[in-house]
Structures are given as C-alpha cells and as structure tokens.
Length: 132
Image (cartoon, rainbow, N blue to C red; front, side, top):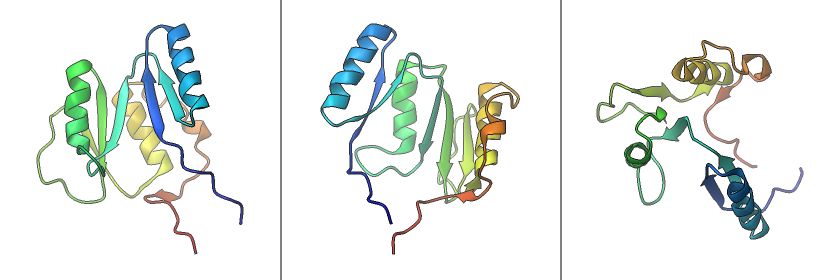
C-alpha cells in the first residue's frame, strides 16, 4: 500500500479581493495548511455531529449570521433530535455520490446542470475505509 499523506490542518479563506485571497492562501500553504479558497460561499455542507467546539447546527447559525442567504445541507447517519429551519436541507448518510450531486444541484437551483456527468462512482459514501 502507498504511504498516507501527513496530516495538514485545513483553512477556509473567504476573501472577495482575489489578490489578497491568493496571498493569504499562499502564506498558509507555505506553513503546512491545506487551503480552500472562495470568494463568496454559496453552499455549506456539514455533518450534524462535529468533533470540537461546535455542532454542525451551531456552525450553520454562525455562518448565517454572516451570510443569511447561505444555502445549507446538513448530513447525519442518525435521525435528527431537533427540527431544522425550513430552508435547511437534511441529507441522510450513507448515500450514493450521484444522490449528493442531485441534492446539491437542487439546493443550488441549477436543476442538475452542474457536474452530474462527472460522477464516476455510484458506491455508497459514508465513512472512509478502515485500514487493515
């Protein structure tokens, strides 16, 4: 088996100025961060149960304080204990890749136009395979 990549913490850089966004991303990349860049996030996909300081629902609430129009898909492998706001989509795990793409397209309002043809895997997606 191949060697696994060393762990790199992830940073999400949201900046509308492309020059500043790229400078920040390069700086973080050089200091061993995995960097994700975007100008204006349009969609948040999160698990309900996050390990750490907040739950997925708390993440949605905080993100919506900044961007009330943010579209959201909340995922879980268990039934939800509380009702979600009407404009938050629940997506059950495990799921097939094509199902996620269809749901994202529906939430984004593109009716399936984006990237369905690029989904080559129809296997269930739940958790990473365990190493032996």
